[in-house]
Image 1 (spheres, one colour):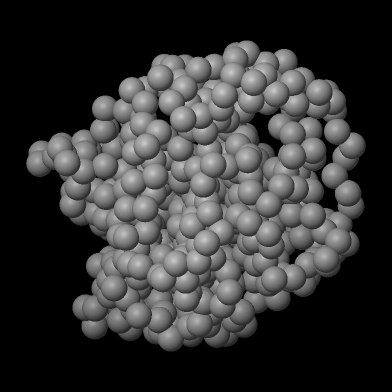
Image 2 (cartoon, rainbow, N blue to C red; image 1 turned 120 degrees about the vertical axis):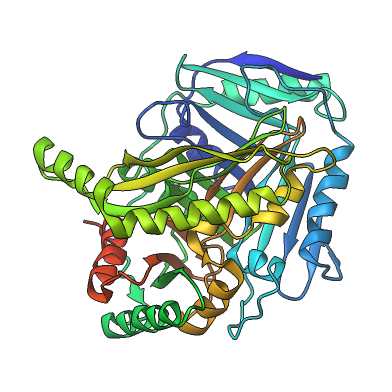
Length: 458
């Protein structure tokens, strides 16, 4: 079983300031409007196990191994986690131990059997850490607990020490250091991006695909003295999101995510849900204008068609591991409001069939359908042909896999990667036969705009 201890309240910003510089830590940072998706925040550090996958090798607890298939990588996670399995965490605690990490678009591309003309570089394509305890904020009740695994987890003295270290944290931290302006450079010019959109439409007209997601990378030089956790402390203030995350994955690689999109959620009974986002409109300058923009998005034939095609793709992907007859769509074309944009969102549900687990689900669904296209395999081949650079972590997933069989995850969009002296972000959008290349470019820039303004110090 699991155990919990009530702790005094400390602000997440304080914890990031004091503990966020560790080479391995994970902060799942639900922000924005408080609702069922954004009730909990989770911070983990001092992992029991780590696993990283690079282009040429795998490292388990820092020891190099020959690189295996993605399915073999997921099986390593499964086997390690099996040694810590518990019946369940407490009903009111979302996580008491397990794997937290990310799987990149490149990891999913290999799962799908799609080759690439792009070199992946030296960044990890998959990274996860196994944590046997976690600090959890309940935003609804304004409480904090320390939760952990009774079997194979912290000893009683270690629990006391973890509580003492938390209690010793100050109530407030010094403000995050100022960062010099960071100027993002696009991997494609406006003309090049529009040509890629037009080329994608030709493939659609020829019958290769129905829809495809075309993206552009933006890169800035990152000064050596800029701390990634300090940068995220500032970012979360200006771009709160229900699936925000900061992951420090070994020395030299950090993911700073402000994702609005849930990828997959699984409860302890095997019930699955995914909420793909497809369809975007700006926020209005007034309440009346905002309502009109939301209504126009809800009625837009192109956006609805784009969303529906991804719903169908996710029905297929989930159906690969679902109990026959359990897949359904309880919500279609809902408009959700975020800090800077409206999105069109749907929900697909199903139930894991007997003999399948969350690792099988990841293998069946990565990379997320909302950032690939339909049919997925051919869309990914076209993406590799038309995009100028590899996506890296972008368009992958951040995941939290609990020892009790639960899972939550997000799509890596609206996210920065800090690695190799650079800060990188990708943005893009779904292309259909009804797309206008110039409008698609403007939508891509709309999604980038608040993050470009943040990077440049506006």
